[in-house]
Image (cartoon, rainbow, N blue to C red; front, side, top):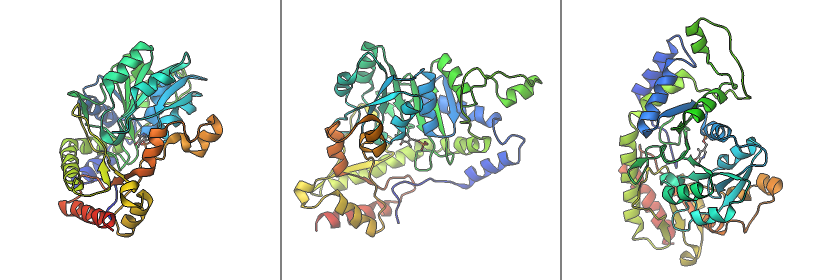
Length: 378
Ligand SMILES: *Cc1c(COP(=O)(O)O)cnc(C)c1O
């Protein structure tokens, strides 16, 4: 089976983790700070806060911005459920906006149509690893005095008009789940340039306590204050050691992902009934996913058939995503349903994610292309 995504762990990574396991600090020690500095440096941002997952990172942002009861946050319909769930964690209301047909990125004009006096923030998702339309979204946010958040869980290492993802919004979330660009097992990070946001999110991941264990050890004091309700969203030192070691390989891995994407794009140009998503020259796409549309009207059969055929042949294709507003939870709690975001819903019938991870060999890529073209020519 060629999976749709897979981590790449080498001996250097294993040694880095083992070194920390032999040290004094398993959690909240020096490697956490070191990893945070490395993430901030990589994205060109002032502050990074590492947390226990990408979802925790998004939750910390909602808290950091002060999203509370009844506040509305605009999120794209085409994303992983966590993007919207974190708004609900804070008592807020996720408002689903449609995406653009060509690239499935949040449509700034659809966002404008959803703004009202209760709207507090907009969440851009760099779907598949392609940066959202940050200039347009920033303008919409400025006009409405709204915060702009980036869910960049697909887009570590991507760039928009020469600027690193992480620097483009008031706060940006990353995930270190094994299918993402670099992994810590589970893990995530928030980047921000705002020192107040930084301080709030830093306390939020540690129960809302203003000092951490190491700071108290260093100061020789037992005293601490819990100033607000937070969570235990800490990331361990040995996970951060893995993250640091993985981060060294990020640039070469993105280069490899882009190579694989180029191979797919070139091959698909000659096959009827399959179309890659559009890409913009404004961005450096980091290709967390390579998503194609299966055009049923040209084939006489659709995505579901192609999915089943490829899975049977050991090609681990996947579908990203079921539009969030179609999930039973959102239908029940917020009364959402079909018709709310027609572009995302139509896309959902057609999209298929092909295997994409840096360790894929050229031969793996060829295998996927041959299997796909055989199914489509049937
Ligand atoms: C992976 C992902 C998340 C959540 O990250 P976890 O680390 O799995 O919690 C959130 N949003 C998007 C778009 C993602 O792809």
